[in-house]
Image 1 (tube, rainbow, N blue to C red):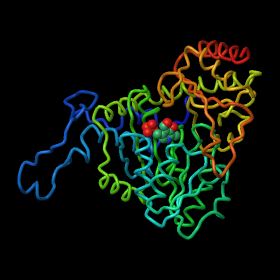
Image 2 (image 1 turned 90 degrees about the vertical axis):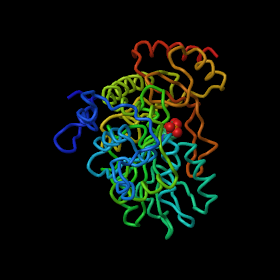
Image 3 (image 1 turned 180 degrees about the horizontal axis):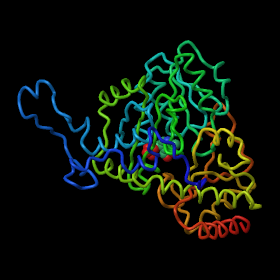
Image 4 (image 1 turned 180 degrees about the vertical axis):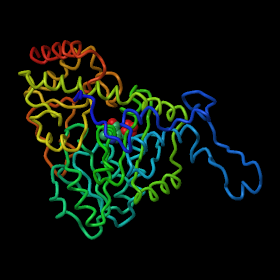
Length: 398
Ligand SMILES: Cc1ncc(COP(=O)(O)O)c(C=O)c1O
């Protein structure tokens, strides 16, 4: 088997790649067309007063779903696997995170957050949840079963990101989930990096799995989107909060997310292959002190990645040998294929400098040099190497 094909685990007889193509399709309902239409709708008409009073009908109100959202949700459920009881759709990845947290938490609860979490998620926890009386604390992503000593009687949820999308520490999800469940604590995972194609976190004990579908599900840097997948225990509270908040997504974005799903397997396999090749190439460069990529054998999170993930995406970081910021800026400014931008997961390569020092509270960020996060897109890797070669020459010369 091609190792870069990633996980092909099936639920039932079909492999993941097949389910990505076949799930959520109802050719008869579309009069033969392969894809559902972009259904734009708020009002749903009821044929009789009796139907109206009984709220009868597959669709009742635009905010609660359309044939387009149904096709996307069925496809996501087929990818997540048998433990997925439902998938909620949100207008951004951050909205998916905040909706899931609001679903689970109330005033007086304690939320434990992985210190490597996406920084705006952290801002939501500190700036919003704390204001509404939720106690928020942070923990070392590598804590494993040691998390048990941090639980309090009011602990309600653990929020993980596996791996962190800048620093790439890899939490041990099954170990943390096993301890959390013994304490009746729910586990929420931001699964944006690997997507459920390469990491079926619900199968590993996570209760709510979130994706910033803005990234690899959309895959073309042209939508903002979020998804919230939940197991049977968590789905009722998630779906209720979605209704209470009025969270829904625009029809064009729903359609584009569904279209992205159909090609996710081939795109992600190429991001995985190219990303690992670039990571290995960079690890041999004298300007690079460390490469933070869990699929590299030398990475501290490699054993967990190998056990729990079927593949890797194209996002990883490098730590350069210590030099002033001007040298890093010279590197960035000399790149022509790698653009400077924050949202990743599209077809294009990106390079962005980062520094976690200011917002870490449970761990110290001291990587040993300036850090740059790279997204390896779908360009030819020889061209990408030539671009970085130019950048590293500018770094050396500065
Ligand atoms: C790991 C992770 N989670 C969530 C988000 C938020 O997604 P969105 O930009 O769709 O709000 C991002 C965005 O960069 C992210 O990297």
